[in-house]
Length: 329
Ligand SMILES: NC(=O)c1ccc[n+]([C@@H]2O[C@H](COP(=O)([O-])OP(=O)(O)OC[C@H]3O[C@@H](n4cnc5c(N)ncnc54)[C@H](O)[C@@H]3O)[C@@H](O)[C@H]2O)c1
Image 1: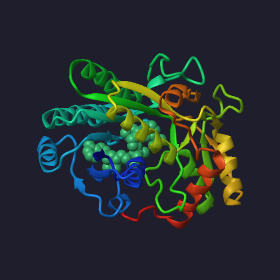
Image 2: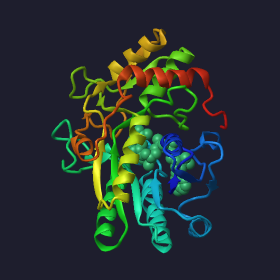
Image 3: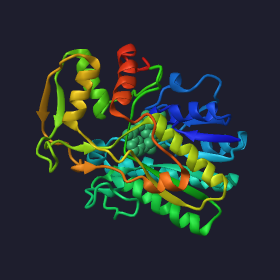
């Protein structure tokens, strides 16, 4: 079996490629490398460098290679930037995805796993959040993910293209050997930022301490990237068995506050870096914790590496040994 991984040079996509290979599945990567890294792509895996909004690139890609399925990670990911520049997000996350789906149709590829996000829920009225909770995104990033989910539902009803959207909560952690990890330009994720504070001696900023939560800081559900990729394998197998279009949460059901993450990073690194409160960032809901029981019950998926200790320890291994990330920026 051969799977096309868009965004496969990025943080989650590059881990996915490794997991596909470990499971005897051939992987091919398409990535613009705008935010990804050549060095993150597993050796021997074909990497096609190009933009998914480029119809010629897509035509050539699908003409050159045959795929049984696609896992579509490519997109922009920064909530704050999406609030400042919504068009950029709608263009890349929606318009480029439409072009990509056109190319899939033309090539008769009919199975797709899509990277959605907990951001589709906005400020939830029920936590843990079930899959059928109302979707009211509060930032353009979340809106872009929700609109693609909705498009995929309509497309699934009208065409052979069936998809599973996975709504990730906070992806985190690195390979357990600390060799491959998170290296986003303009990093906005809390665990890398806390670990950077441990390395560079600068204070770690918590954005807002007046949220409606147990200690006033935002609460998130942290899912180790290995567990997240395992959920994609479950979704892929379900589609191959004929599963119809659907969407599932991927999280642990347990939330940690920003202060708790800062404390875990201090504990794991053994470095008592300063923690300070900075102003809120636009578009951050109080608490996002997943109810993933449908994913667990229907696909038998269970998180195995998503305890905070394993997450922060693996991430620390990566950051401490790769202070410049993949070193290509
Ligand atoms: N990291 C998280 O916690 C998280 C949470 C929820 C959802 N997601 C979603 O998961 C996916 C992957 O996230 P990530 O953290 O690995 O991000 P990432 O930025 O590391 O990876 C995305 C990759 O897509 C590529 N890309 C972007 N636009 C492209 C385009 N038009 N054509 C070709 N390549 C393009 C980038 O170069 C990058 O390598 C994204 O869709 C993101 O929205 C991530």
